[in-house]
Amino acid sequence: MENFKLILKLYIRPAFAMSEIMDKGSWLFAAIAVLVVSLVFQYWINSKIIETYAVSQTDYYLSNSNFDNSPSVTGRLTNEQLKEVEYFANVDIEKEFRQKRRPFPIIGKNIFYFFSFYSNFFTPLITLSVFYLPATILLLTLIAQLGNVGVVLRRDYSTLAVCSLMAWIAAHLPFALAALLLYSQVIDGSVYLGFWLVSGIGFGTLMVFALRTVFGVDFGRAILTISISWIFYCFGTYIYGFISPWLFSPFLLFFALIYLGGYLGSEVRGLGNSMRQKRDLKRFLQNATVNPNDADAHLQLGLIYAKRHQEGKAFEHFTKAFEIDNEEIDANYELGKIARKDGDLQKAINHFSVVVEQNDKYSLSEIWREIGATYLEADMQKEAFDALDKFVTRRAFDSEGLYYFGILLKKQSDDERAKEMFARSIEAVKTAPYYRRSELQKWSRLARKEL
Image (tube, rainbow, N blue to C red; front, side, top):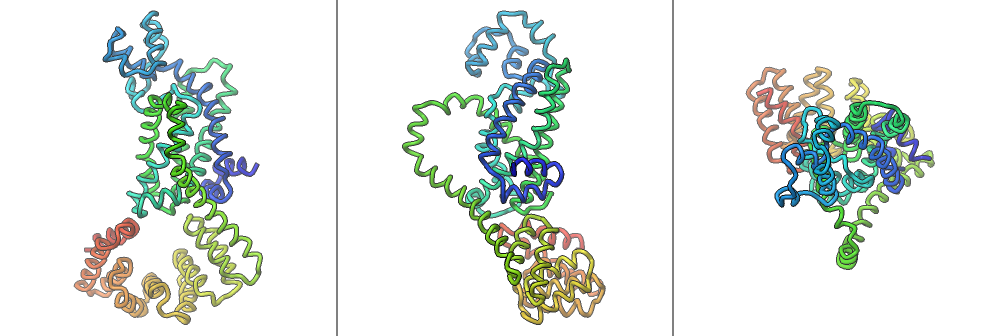
């Protein structure tokens, strides 16, 4: 029942729901639900599209040449497609193909290069798991520069798999139910094509929230990744149509079990353990919050929610940590950053002052960058200069701090030194570790605009 509630939450609060799915979602439930929804989708929506439009590879060959059993044609078709071609070869092709089936909108006979409507009900589950998710992680790792692909894959594949399967269910379930209700009605196939198209767009939209929540990336990189990765889903569906007969060969399965079983078993256990460890950590922290004097548990939960872009929940736990111990250095630092973001500059300075009193070099002196940026927004130039000058002296290659200092110097009409800071900010991004460059590119772009 809990998993059904999580699916419903995706329609109302997708970002919050993805965070909950990370902690409570069941892969087994999601996999079974995908199979059920896919079964309905295949036989009540895809079948209507097939009846209305020329959407198969067989249709492509029939529309381009007369079937003559030549190797050039038959060599590129599976047994099922050959049977279909033979059927059309023995009937009135003009009537069956040109009159009964309309060309697919916009891309016409090229549709079979991208999508397959002649698939098994378990095709979406396998295509998502084997092709789409690894390719999506690979793309996001390159676009957002998250680090080593292998490490990211082992760490986050299972979590993303649960979120993605739940997203697929949520995107397709309403249209599958609608198709069941309308199946006995005489409705044009374009309606079912609309169901198919909107469900695909819905899945892509929910996947943006999944990437943002699981990996902590911004909307821009998540959207760019999903805009490209759908190609791999199409590719996977296309390839799966040719290799699926071999996947269930007892001979192949036997040798896969003998030679690869141990390795795959350890990898699968590793993927599952990664997700369980994340859930166990959060569960432990939530249990720890029962102690009214444990500020650190609330702080750690706040950091988890902040990484998932759940700002409201993060603020709630940071505030509780502060209420338990108003001298808690990490809680003051995080609340100060939130207050500055919200424009409450005096409150931000109050929190930052508590941090500085305890540790002048907190977070590798980043506390002074935050203080300087806050005073800069308040147009208190002297105080901003003192803080930023101290920070830049200590951290000469921090692109964000250099940019802020450049803006301050420009306000003070020290144009030459301001240009030097902007140039150093750009150079700091260029020389940063590759996995951080994507995160820091913002300051390089802003600095370039000032030069």
